[in-house]
Every structure is written in structure tokens, then in C-alpha cells.
Length: 275
Image (cartoon, rainbow, N blue to C red; front, side, top):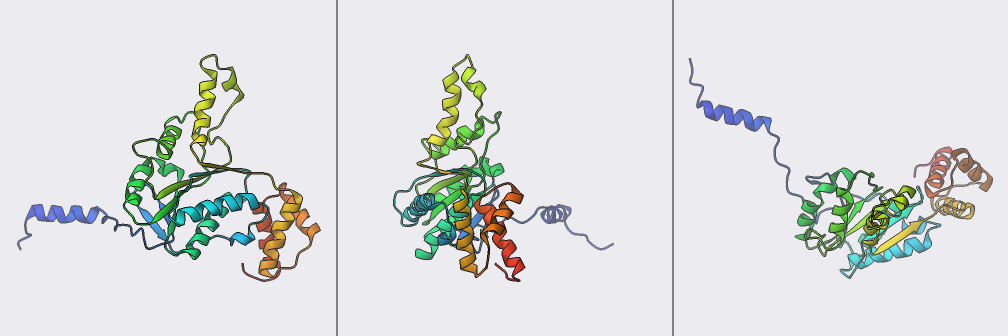
């Protein structure tokens, strides 16, 4: 019988085949955006975002967010941001568009890093990695919300924003979108709690207070809805009628930037065009 070699070597080789290879180190200077999964990051070659000029009906919010991202890109003092309010009014689109605009102005200056809510526990590791880089980063958490029973999540986020030993480094800022101004759900029963009723409320509001900028997005008026469609239609060369656009919103029971974009997509499909 032929020699089968060292049994220990064969076992080691078999174990190596079972264990996946280690992920290559992340090049934090190579991409305009990244997606962090809790253990490593995947580079994104292009930020999908509308031009800032196409975001209508949110002029004040646009000026504030884009201005703050420009400060970060330039290495100046910049705020952590909480964008809260009505669904579909362009909170995440505005963040992506602002970073893309800053990158076009100063290439390589700032990168967007999107983090899923289920990867929040790994933010300390992410901050450690980003803090070593000669680049600025906007860490983006979309549609954040904590359940009533989750006490550790809000406390950890407060610590990262301000004052904790694992607070985010100077070259990193956080941007969070949420449908709720306080991020954490609040109930009228909190006001009736006989044990420190104000403490329960203030503890939840303290999380939102940690953000230097808290920017509200409100329900879309009819004029704003039509202005959003008009801007997109002009940019893409699409014909449209106001009564048809309003009927589209009535059938969906809402007016928002998202509903307006869906209508523009419908117009492009009718015209045989791509967006």
C-alpha cells in the first residue's frame, strides 16, 4: 500500500478546506461608498442618487444637509445628523445626493458607509478601522428605530455620538434617518408612570439631542408634489399633465417625493424611455 503521508498533515489540510479564506483587507480609499455587514465592508463603485437640483420641495433641508456634508468633505467641523419625518420625502436620497455632490467637488475627500441596523453592535470595530484612515466618512444608518424593550441599543448609540470611550473618531460623522423624531417610540403612558415619569421621557429624547442637526421632513403639499414631478419631467424630457399626476397620487392615497418618482417612472415607461 502506498504511503499516505503524515495523518496530522492530512487532517490539517482537510480543516483548511472546510474553513473559508479570510476576507481581504478593506481598502477604505478605493470606493465612493461601502456597505458594512458587521464584520467587513463591501466597496460600492457608484452612489445611486439623484442630482441635488432634482430634489424639490425640501429646499431648506437640502441646504442644511448638503452644507454639512461639504464641511465634512473639506475637513472642517461638521455635525452628526438626524433626518426624521414623513416617509418618502427624500431623507436617504438627500444624504446620498449630498455625498455624491461633495465627491464631485472634491474627489476622494469623503465616503459614505451604510450600516444595517442589525450591525449596530459592530460600530465600535468600524470606527476603529475608519479612524486609521486619512479620509472623511459619513456613516449612514437608514430607517432607524428601536423597540420599547431595547434599552442597550439607544444607550450605545448615545455613547458613540458623544462622550463614550468608543465615540466615533474625528474623521467620522453619523447620519441617521428615522420616521420618529425621538427615534425611540414614545407613549402617553410614560407621562403617567408614578416612578420618575419625566426620566422615562427624557432618557428617550436624550438620544435625539445628541445629534448636532435634527432636520424634519414633513408631509408633501400638492404644490410641492407637482413641483417635484415638474423637475424630474424637465430633466428627462417627459410630457405630463397635472390632473394625471394628481390622479396617480389619489390612487396611492399619498403625496410624497417617492410617489412622485413612481409617477415619473410610469411616464418614462409610457414614453418608451429609460431613466
